[in-house]
Length: 351
Ligand SMILES: *[C@@H]1O[C@H](CO)[C@@H](O)[C@H](O)[C@H]1NC(C)=O
Ligand SMILES: *[C@@H]1O[C@H](CO)[C@@H](O)[C@H](O)[C@H]1NC(C)=O
Ligand SMILES: *[C@@H]1O[C@H](CO)[C@@H](O)[C@H](O)[C@H]1NC(C)=O
Ligand SMILES: *[C@@H]1O[C@H](CO)[C@@H](O)[C@H](O)[C@H]1NC(C)=O
Ligand SMILES: *[C@@H]1O[C@H](CO)[C@@H](O)[C@H](O)[C@H]1NC(C)=O
Ligand SMILES: *[C@@H]1O[C@H](CO)[C@@H](O)[C@H](O)[C@H]1NC(C)=O
Image (cartoon, rainbow, N blue to C red; front, side, top):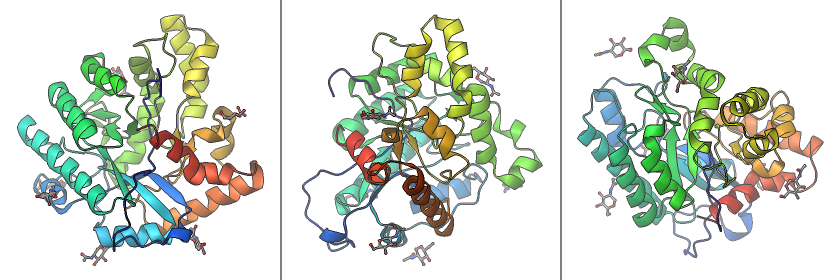
C-alpha cells in the first residue's frame, strides 16, 4: 500500500489466509460467494457480565443474545462468508471501571476475537478494541492487536467519555495507526457531551445510539474529519468513515466550507478526501439513502454491513434485499459483487 495512510471509518476484510476449512465452516467451496460483513459485533459472556454489573446498556438498547453457533447460522442465512467482528459501544470503557480494569477488559475482548479467528479462520476477522481516551493504553493495545494478534484493524468509537475521536491529544495513537496503514472502523459512541445530558426519556425510549449518531454527525463530523485530516494535508490519503455514511452526503458542502475556512485547502482536495471514505450499508441501504450516498461516493467505497446482532436478522434480511434490488435496478453490472464483497476484499487484502 505504498504511501497510503488509511483511516477507514468502516470496513472489513477478506481472508486470503491459506487456512484449511475446519469442521465448523458451514459453507462449502462452491457456495463461497458471497458477502463480507464489515459491520458486525460480538458479545462474549464476560463482556455481557461487566455491562450487567455496571448497569450499562449498549447505546441505549438492551443487549441482544450472542453465541458463536447462532452467529454462524446467521452468516450462513445471509451468505456471509467472512465477518469482521468488533465490539460495539461502550467497548471496554465502561462507566465504573478503572483504567486498569478497562485495559484488562480490552485485552480480554481482543483475545476472544483473536481466538475466534484462529478457531474459524475462514469465517472471522476482527477489529480490535482499545481504551480511549486513555492514549497510552490505547497505543500499546493497538500495537499488540495489529502486530501480534493480526487484527484486521481497530474499532474506534466516535467518542468516549466525552472526547471525540478527532481529539489532537490522540496524536500518538494516530501516528501508530498511520505507520501501519491501519484500517479504522469508526462506529457511533456515546455523545461527546455528557451521556446523561442527552439521555432524556425520549432518547431512552427511541434508542440513544440512533440519536447520538445523528448528533455526532450533525455537529461533530467536521471536527472529527478535521482532527484526523489536518495531520498531513500533503499525504492525501487519510480516510475516515462514518458508519453507514448516512449523513455524510448531506454534510459534504458544510464540511468543505468549514475546512476551507480553517485550513485554506482547496475544495477539490477536501472533496477527494471525503470521497476516499468507505461506508457500510448496515440498516441504511435503501432507495431513500443510496441516491445521495452514491452521488458522493463511487461504488468502490461501499461495503456490506449488517450490524448483527444489534440489528435483528429479519431487519438485516430486508435491508439486504433492498440493497441488492437497488443496485440491480440502478447500477452497472458488477456493482453487486463490489458491494457484497469485492470492495471489502480489496481493502482487507492490504492488511
Ligand atoms: C440501571 O440503569 C437504569 C437506567 O439508566 C436505572 O433506571 C436503574 O435504576 C439502574 N439500576 C441500578 C441498580 O443502578
Ligand atoms: C445461542 O444464541 C441463540 C440466540 O440468542 C439462542 O437461541 C441459543 O439458545 C444459544 N445457544 C447456546 C448454545 O447458548
Ligand atoms: C443465499 O444463497 C442461497 C443459495 O445461493 C440463495 O438461495 C439465497 O437467496 C441467498 N440469500 C441471500 C440473503 O443472499
Ligand atoms: C483464548 O484461547 C486461549 C487458548 O485456548 C485461552 O487460554 C484463553 O482463555 C482464550 N481467551 C479468551 C478471552 O477467550
Ligand atoms: C462537537 O465537538 C466540539 C469540539 O470537539 C465540542 O466542543 C462540542 O461540544 C461538540 N458538540 C456536540 C453537540 O457535542
Ligand atoms: C470509480 O472507481 C473506479 C476504480 O477506481 C474508476 O474506474 C471509476 O471511473 C470510478 N467511477 C466514478 C463514477 O468515479
